[in-house]
Image 1 (cartoon, protein in one colour):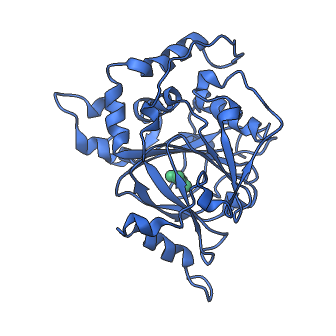
Image 2 (tube, rainbow, N blue to C red):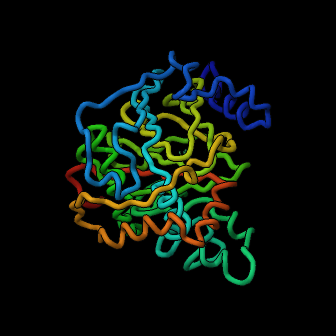
Image 3 (cartoon, rainbow, N blue to C red):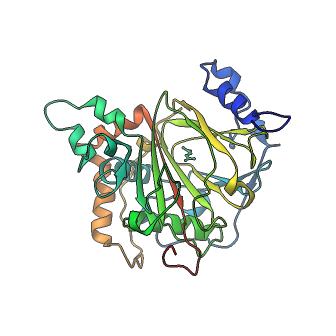
Amino acid sequence: MSGIHGDLFMKTFKYYRARVPLSTFSAVIETDSSNFQDKVTRVTFDGKTHDDRLEILGLNSFDNWRVFNIKEHPGLILIRNPFTALGQRYWIRKCLEEYPRKPNKTNIDIEVMLEDWWKACFEGDKCNKKLLKKLRWTTLGYHHNWDTKEYSEDNRGAFPSDLAQLCDVVATYLGYTDFRAEAAIVNYYHMNSTLSAHTDHSEVNLDAPLFSFSFGQSAIFLIGGKDKTTEPSAVLLQSGDILVMSKEARLCYHAVPKILSAKTSTWNKDVQKIYTKTKPKFKYINEIEHIESMNRNYNDENWFLFDDYVQESRINVNIRQVLNETQSKLC
Ligand code: SIN
């Protein structure tokens, strides 16, 4: 227990976790609402006005992004409306259909090694709901070791190139030109799931920002200080939001005490195919294939399976740089 002020983080966590009426969530910061003008500052970035990769990665043009600093937490940035509806669908599908496949790791591995979790859920006549709900996390790139909390070269897979490009677009926009996406944890939440207070400090490089993408249902996100004596702020995270933990906020305690129903399913609103005219110079992506797999989510007959999942769940993709700029591997 922490000092004379006790564990204020835990107290707040328990408050939001309890099944209290929504009206008691009035302190949860909604960055777009005029009620929170004293808590947030809307910021604009003069640097980059365009990136050729936006459309192909399912992102809106920069002038549609709404970027907020959370005043009490220097370095905590929330980007609203960066994704198109098709883009949200693309990343939702990746998180369900592709990322939990071997050789990536999931929480289910200790029970049974499934080559392809999503496929296994739909084998036979009916969907295996129990298996569908069992997935809590999958790791990509340097796999997070939940016991030792240490990364190692022996426990490393390939990092998806499109996901790395997505982070690079966001990082470059914010002025982090050297960011390298090297490890990801994808968290899967159901309506009664929570994530307890923790800090992310396993990376060698603790100066690089951490990028956190939210899809599906909404969440109350708590962020406090470097120990648990600071009373945390509560911020609403909605589908398509990007939260960036940088500078002082990078090492602060954070948690998810509550999942809330989304006000609207923004991934189903005004979905449009892409017909890109620009030629993004991707080094690692086959553009034709990539555009096809993006557009597949426009009217694919199987899309409803992914929609059913996120109608009752939230997905969070949490991405970190592990190494220092001069390193190519862990010592
Ligand atoms: C995390 O801190 O690992 C996840 C946060 C979130 O789900 O938004």
